[in-house]
Amino acid sequence: MIPGVSINEILTLTSILFFIGVYGFITRKNLISILISVELILNTSVINFVVINKYLYPELLQGMLYSIFIIAVAAAETALAVAIIINIYRRTGSVAVRETETMKH
Image (tube, rainbow, N blue to C red; front, side, top):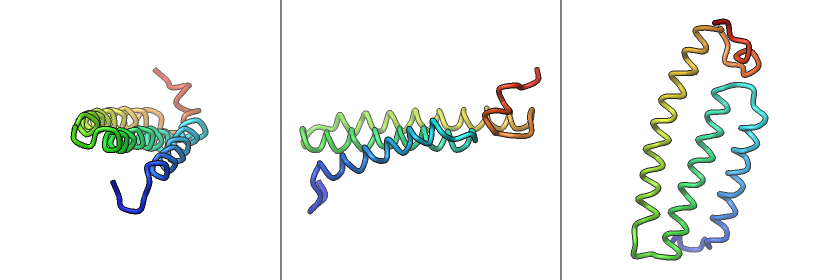
């Protein structure tokens, strides 16, 4: 663990960051901002896995392995989402959520 920092402080910080990500996901109108909010949510869950694993089972690496798996899935998800957003932008000329609901086929 980090010297001088308790698990409660870390979990409080990650909870705050998680809810900032949820707020951003709900309130943003831009697809890029929504993607960034989803990434913030995923990264806070990764930090929680690592911290709880280190606190409960410091000799085991399951939390770290789950974290690496989540990071790999998040990277693939981001690449796919960016490709979709680029195609939507080429088709509509905007990445605003309201304008993409009425896309022309």
